[in-house]
Structure formats: C-alpha cells, structure tokens
Length: 139
Image 1 (spheres, rainbow, N blue to C red):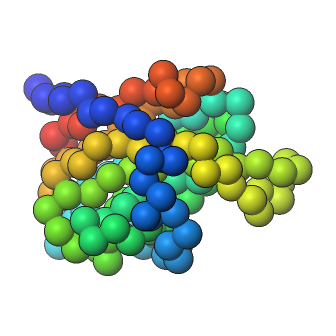
Image 2 (image 1 turned 120 degrees about the vertical axis):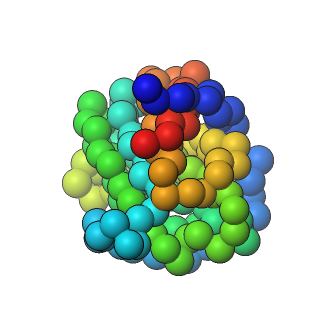
C-alpha cells in the first residue's frame, strides 16, 4: 500500500531568490544504485510548463517541459540532492507554440519534500495554477 502526504503549493513569486538560477539538464534515467526521487507532472493547465527542482541550497535545476494536456515523469538529478529536501517549481511557458523560449515567473512551487530515492512527488496542475495539488508517495 502506498502512503501519500499532501504537500502545499505556493506562488513561485514568493521565492524570488531561486528565480534566475542557471538551469541544469536533468540526468537520464539511471540504474538502481543511483536512484533518485521521481517527479511526475499531469498538466491540465492551458499552457506548456517548465518544471524545475530546487535543491536545499536554493539552486534551480531544469527537469523539462510538460505540454498542456500531457503527463511526464522525471528523475531528480543527483546534483540537485545537496541536502535532505527539495522543492518542485512549475512555471508556465509563454510565447508562440513550439518556441517556448520565455517563461512567466507566475508559477507554483511545492513545500520542502524529503529527497530520498523512494519518494515520488506528483503534481496535478489545474487550469488555475493556484488550485493545483501535490502529493508525496513512497514507492
């Protein structure tokens, strides 16, 4: 049986300290010896979104983009595991479809989540991002 704990999502604008950090490409799926937490995103928002993980030291690491009406799963890169917790940040992409070169800083961010390999962070994004939910499961 999987246990889930609800996590709080707050506007990303409150976390200006992490905005503008250089993104780092997510690591490819790795073997069991390099297991890291998983981030799963279901995007019901009307725009594509950029997904980041914010490490305990405040560095933002780019995981990828989830197109509207799509689902994607990401492994948290090992370089993002600088402490005991991480946060997941989601920011809508703006601009012409396909380019996605600009992001709006009006996004959402989870509370701190324990960064163990058996964790799965799931985000269900709603059309109104402030109504989105996050859960943390134990794999």
